[in-house]
Length: 399
Image (tube, rainbow, N blue to C red; front, side, top):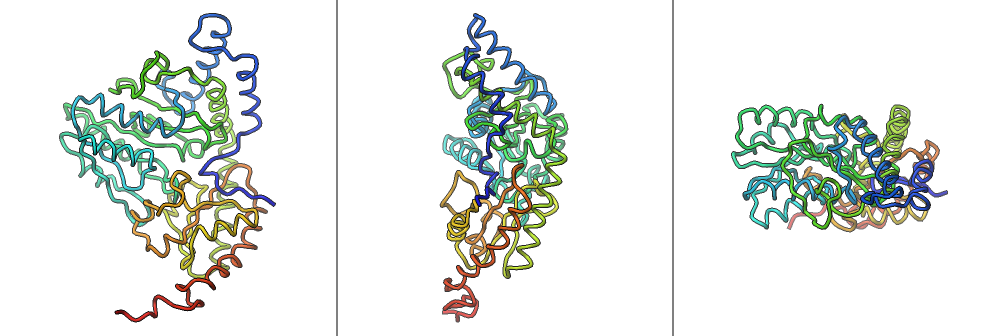
């Protein structure tokens, strides 16, 4: 049996999505910037995909800009907005952002921009009040992710958007608001107008679309510069020949995700709660990371104290179960998210993320629960930190 519980890392392309893409590899392979019939067919497919996505997130088609991935979308939002600001302005973000935002903000800081990295609470939530308190006369951009990719916590994006909109009524220089929605889109309803965002980043491979394509929503009137040069595509904001096949696939995948949303959400909740209850009932000394009441719905981040998370992953993999210790973009590194949440280092060291997708089943959860306790206990028996091992840290005398 092979079980895939790493859907927050990437997802399988749906067969219907692959079928939708196939003609644009084989027969309708024209360049959308050319004038002949092949190009016109490609342009029509591009326009239809843009329209379909815009209808799902409630924006105008010309506010959708296609990119190569979610990371590029985040980079374009931050670098592009700050480049257009005309000064070394101020950026506000959080300490738990995906590295696509976090490292971009750090690069801007090195380039002379002022950056505030906000704290979060023990559940991974940033407060609206802390965002407001950090805003200065020089603030140009606020970037807060909608759903955290490691613990699944949903941030108060609509509330932050409302607060910024109210402040902008009395400001000469507008504050722009960006959200990284890579982990949330396709799982929860997204209406950019209700969220109050000026920019939103997304990536197709998180909702059963192809890898290597994403988009950036940019509200009309947002002052943003391109960060690459070379062509007129995407209204000059993102040059390069559009990847028609993958763009078409992304639009189809997003459509399918929302058509099946209610049924999928119910299934994911059952699997998530079954796994959580099973772990609590069979394994001692565990803790769950993130906000239970405001979770994206498909992520469980659990700490098995006194073991190495990567060692448990290897043993799970040997039993055909794929999970992760956190972001696939930071494998092997300590979790900056758990550190920002104040999770005890011993608990953070043993943290595992299980993330469910549309193809997972309750039987897979039950199989995982049948092997997980034995694997955890086996590792703890070898751990000098566990009470059953050679040394109990809690009982060790202070020097």
